[in-house]
Image 1 (tube, rainbow, N blue to C red):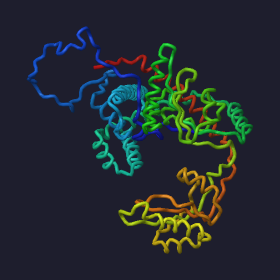
Image 2: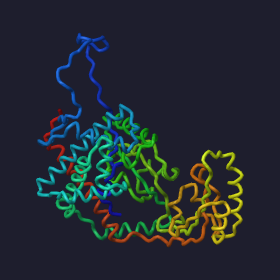
Image 3: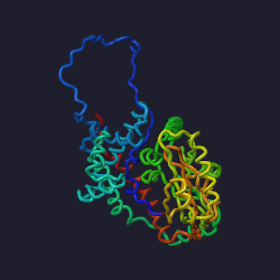
Image 4: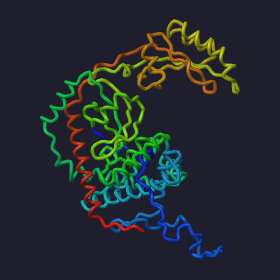
Length: 445
C-alpha cells in the first residue's frame, strides 16, 4: 500500500509534543525579592507590539520569525480544541520551530537541485485542503485567520511537502532497488499466513540511548497523557514520532504481530479496537501503539458486508424528558420488532409520525461500534433496538438486504513492490534530512 506524504496534509497534521521545556536559570539570588532593585513605577519608552516579526532562527540565511512559529503553533492548538496546558504549549512551540527548520532545509535543498514548486500547484493543493473542510479557499483563509494562523503558513507547509517529495523522486527513488524475489517471498508469507490475525496499527516512536533513556520515557509519557485527554493520534504522530511513518500520521498499515517487536506483539492480542497503549520499551526507544482495526489474513471480514438499510426516526417536542418519552419509545420498539420486514417500515414510521430514509450501500464496519454487533447478527427484515436520544430523535435500523464480502485476495505484486520501495525511500529520506541538519548554519535569536 503506497502512502503519499501529501495524503497526510491537514490541520490535524500540525499537532506535536516534544521533550522538556526550558526554565530560566536561577543564580545565587534566586528567591530574593527584587534582586535587581527595579523601581515599582516603571516608565516604558516605546511601544511593545507582539505582531512585530522578530527572528527566532536563521537557517542558512533564511529567517524564521516569531510570527511564523505562532501561526503554525495556532494550527496545533486549533486541532486540539485549544486544550493544551501552558507547559505543553511551550514544548509544542519548540517542536514547531524544529519542524519549520526542517521544512526550510527541505525547500532550500530542493531549490539548490533546481526543483521548484509552481505557485499554481501550491494553490491547487490549498484548494483541495480547503475542500476537505468544506470551505472555499477564501472561507478557509478567513477560518485560518480566526484561529491566529494564515493561508501563507499552510501554503509554506504545502511547498515544503511538495518540494521535498519531488526532490526524493529525482535523487532517491531512482536508486532504490527492490528485487522480484523479495516481493515473491512476501506474497508467499502472506499466503502461508492465511487465516491468522492482522492488525491495523498506528505508532508513535520516540528514540532513546542509554544516556537519554529516562528523558525519552518521560517525553513518551507526556505524549500518552495528551492522547488520553483526546489529542489526535495522527496529529501527534506526524509531528512527534521519529519513525518514517510520521509523515502519514504513524500509520503502519496492516501487520501481523510477528512482524513487530516482541514487546508489542505480546500486547496487541489483548487490545481493543480504538485503544492506545502507554509507552512500550522496544529496541532503540519507546513506542505508543494505537490499534485501529483487526482482521484475518486473506479471509473475508463479515464487517465488510454491504447492507441495504431503512432508518426510522421518531422525534419528541422540545423539553420532553426521558421519563415522559419512555412509553412512546417502548411502543416504538415493540412495533419495529413485530413489523415483519422492510415492507412495513413505512407504515410504522407513519404510525409514530416518524421519518424514514433508506441507503443501499452501507458497510457494517462504517456503523457505530455499538451497532456493529447487532447488525451482524440480524436476519433480513429484522431491526435493531432503538438508539439515539430524546433531543436528537430515537431511531432503529431495519436490515433489508446484505451482500457478504468476497474472500480477500493477497495484495498484487505491484502493490507490495510499491510499499517496499516507499519504505526504503523513507529510510533514505531520513538520512538525507539528518545530513542537511548536520551541515546547516542555524542561528537562534
